[in-house]
Amino acid sequence: MAKIQYRAIIPEEIEYVRELYETSFPDSEKKPFDAIVRIDREDKGNMYTILKGEEAVGLLFTLENDELTLIDYFAIDPNAQNGQVGSKVLRTFFEEEEKPIVLEIENPEKAEDAEEEFIRKKREAFYLRNGLKIMPYRVDLFGVEMKILTYGETISFEQYLKVLQDTLFEGVEKYVKEVK
Image 1 (tube, helix red, strand yellow):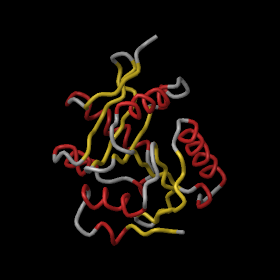
Image 2 (cartoon, rainbow, N blue to C red):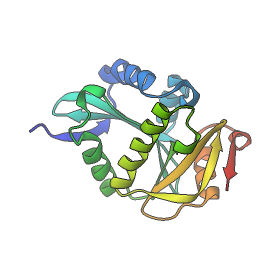
Image 3 (cartoon, rainbow, N blue to C red):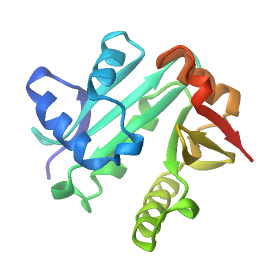
Image 4 (cartoon, one colour):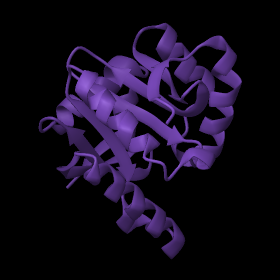
């Protein structure tokens, strides 16, 4: 069985990762890919490639400050899904990361149709099965209502907002609101 792992992205994988990123996330949630590359270069986050053996099969992008690691984007190639690749990578990432981990998912209750609601609920169940827990607040992030999940400990809205302020751009707080 091929080893499942993640490592820092290498130049030869940029186009594959860019394409997977562009096809895996809705436009309303995507940053310009060049902004993700900039965050990585400025050491405000990391771009990882997920490998099955020697084959690139996914991506993991983080935002990081001194207190937290935010999983900004996580995707497994559709051709590699249903083989526990995502779960194995998350377990390894959780074991190796020293700081509390936080991530956002779209609120299933705010889906535009039944198909989107099903996908969002499936995504939420995946993260809960893998040890994350839902925080007691939601966030309006650039007009999209998100649930906040954490691994390790409870993360306040203020801690979550600070990682965005430390890693994205000045004034980002204008686009992030707590929803109770």
